[in-house]
Length: 245
Image 1 (cartoon, rainbow, N blue to C red):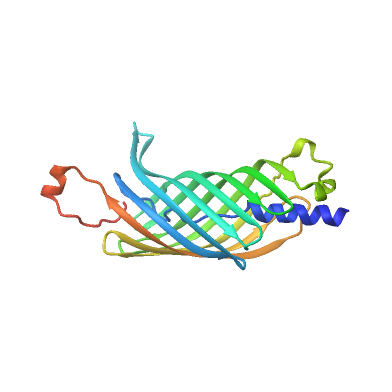
Image 2: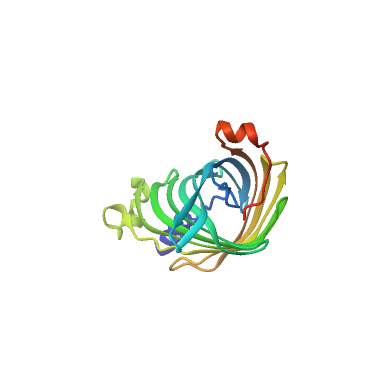
């Protein structure tokens, strides 16, 4: 009985710790939009995701004077038997910059939906990403330091396996499945509108009551960037790509 319960919790853990990297890996310039499509693998399971992003300039006195990129992301991870859908909403920007060395951070909120023959689960959580590195006009190379967790969740089990969830009142659980990852982000710009980006993460899952579980997660993505200018700007200035600074 105990081993069955542990196995089920382990499956839930893998389901809620899918991490999407479709969102842009560098902040955009103000009034820019970006659309991204990403493919990759979480362990040996395929992952795809799509996202849309837009950047605003935030100026609040002497406290804040910086660009912030907001994004909405959808990801799906499946082994063609169990399926996990993830919706992500968040923002990113630079904590500080010294020439081409920039310290980017990302904060997101997530909704994860896990579907299998045994049970269905919905989980709410959040993520924090720190990405210090070198961001140039034509490319970027940055470290990837990630932490994520799920705050709460609801599980509906098939009656045949309901007995393993007898300690879960009304199906509500507090997972606290902390996820730690470290890796590298890479990107290369093709002209001013196209970006090829990718990342490799070494994943360490440290949820409660479970053993150390390493995994490798990698993706490659393609981003299309749109510069939105008014008619006067378009007439006076040709479209020229500039570094984010």
